[in-house]
Structures are given as structure tokens and as C-alpha cells.
Image (tube, rainbow, N blue to C red):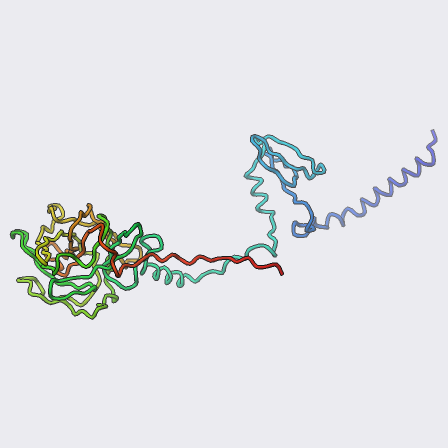
Length: 352
């Protein structure tokens, strides 16, 4: 049987094509496939949608719709196809995408430079000196004892001056020891001038903040250290102005208001034997160790009070911090107000 001339010519072309493929195969094997970074900018994305049986579909995009996964097939000319979600390994697909996604160097965000750990520590220490105790309200760098109050719905910090009756008055933290005899009958410890304290708070559950001992307690008003006769107290002369101590306990004593005076009476220094006119506080050292937060263990009704530092089982600081609770009192003149942080405002630029 004889073949036609056309059939013979076709056979020769097929043999040449096969021969060329065999000769070029080694060179084609050495040519790497283009990486995603080498693809043209307008080239469609290629994703391996990996199935749970280990196989995969090459797609340009996919999305989960109910119990199915819809995808655009890159192998079948952009046909939209559907596969049950139960057959798709989404975790493996996401891992494949993370390994093969190449960031655009023109749009990728540069990683922020590393910050020196020492600088971070210094910044944390600075922030601990003035911690925020309410929205946009921070404790000041200077000050000894402050109360967190609320006036007309706005939180504020009221500095509470330290007082030792008629002898002296300062906002610094001075220590003036006096001995309490637990077996003695109640008696006057100190008498404060006036029927009302200079500071009047407006809530019955204020929080107090005491700066812990450092060098920042020099009196701002030029007050001298306090000196009184404590009638048997150990150490009549107080120490130099200093901060509070985490070893102290603090009690809030309701004063006995008399004509032109307020009297602080003695009380039991044992919190397990509470007196009617004494409210003990719960202490908490704030991060950084610069401030002690005191929370009263009960509400403080309308009246006049003194915050008393209990130094030991028998010693107290006779320099007290006096204040009143008066919901309709005027605002405290020296109170610190919230200072909202300045927010960045972006302005729209006109087109060039």
C-alpha cells in the first residue's frame, strides 16, 4: 500500500519536531521558571488551592461561600468553579500564600528601626513618675499627697496640704512621730485651725495617691520641718521632708468639729479593732514604685477628715493631711484638670 506525498511530508515534519524537542530538552530543563517577582506587573496571580488529599488547583482567586469554595481556575481559562469546603485544606493554602507572596518594594512598609532597650527603660521610668489615673489626667511630677476627686462629672486631682495644727503647714511630706498608748482613754492628738479644711472633695469614695520616698519633696511654700512637744513621743524632731513609705499604714480619721477648730482624737492602731470614726485604707504600689495608691475601705460621708500615717504599732505621724467631703463645695483652686492629648489633624492638599 502506497502513501500519498502529503502523508510522507507530514511524517517528515513530525520527525523533525521530535528531533528538535529532544535536542532542546536539556537546555529547557536548565532554564528556571519565572519567580513571582519576575512576572509582569499585569500578570494574573497564581495560587495553589490545596485539597486535603494532597492535590491542588491553580487558581487566580478564591473565596469561601457557605459550605463551598468558589475559585477562578487559572488552568481552564478563568472559568469559575466550585469545590466543597470540606475538601479544601485552607490552612495549607494560607501557608502556601505566605511563602510565595512577594512584597512590592515600592509599597511595602519598612520595618521600624530597633529601639535601644536602655531608651525604652528610661521612657518607662519617666512614664512611671507621672502615671495616668483617669482619662487624660496624670499625677504631677511634683507633689506629695493628692486625692482623685470628681467635680461636675470631670475627674481632677486635688493636692492635700500636710498640717500640724497651728505650728506649720506645708504640702511636703514631713514625719513627726507621736506615741499612741493603746490602753489610754481617747484623747486629742492634734487640733487643726478652722471648722473646714482648705481642700473639699465632692465624692464619698475618693482615691488618694502618696509619692513614695525620694528627693522630690522639698516644700514648695518654703515651710520648715515641723517641731512639737509630743509629751513622751520618741524623737521630738521630725526627719527632713521625705516621701511616704510602703511600710506605713494609712487611716482616715473623722475629726471632731468644734468652734473654729477640728480635733483629731486618738484611735486604736489595730485595723482588727475598727473605731466608728476611723476608715482604714487598702494600699497598692503603682508600677515603677514611685506612687502609693490608697483606696478607702468604706465610703466617707459628709464631714471633715484627716489622713493619718501609721508608722508602727504605736507610732503615728502627727503631721496629717486634712480634707473635707462636701458634694456642693466650690471647685478646688489648685486642682489638676484633664489635659486631652493633641490629636493629629490631616489636611487635604489641593491637587497639583
